[in-house]
Length: 190
Image (cartoon, rainbow, N blue to C red):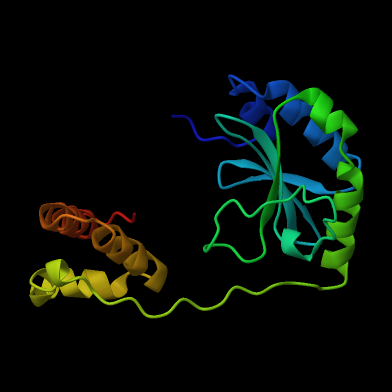
């Protein structure tokens, strides 16, 4: 898969929701935001602050606001797409161009920009320490693996641990631990 480097290439690569993303993009760009690609999709910033992004998924196109929980959403358009994972981010899903045309999106964008300019932010809570899975402990006795493991950022170690710990079967946890060791030893991150 080719890396997306421009919003145009992102849009051209869409099989569905192309019209919806184009219309959302027009609405966003009428608000003096800087356009870039982050996390493989269109992202819009102002003064170096992430304001919102656009995305096309299997069942809908959406606009998501980094600090969407701060927006006045009296009609309940916004939703937390990753309940329990994100505190501030909210998204608004669309399944047609007509839905987008009827929606008061510009007001939400202006409010998001104003909130950012005022410095309003919901800060993420630090994640609690995650125990190293029992399946990794034998591998940590190997000095070479341990030094490479310790050199990983806390977030990368957490991702490996979460992957192993969320498996229900012991054989799956063992297999994931072995894959983790292979990846770490070859210098790859999750």
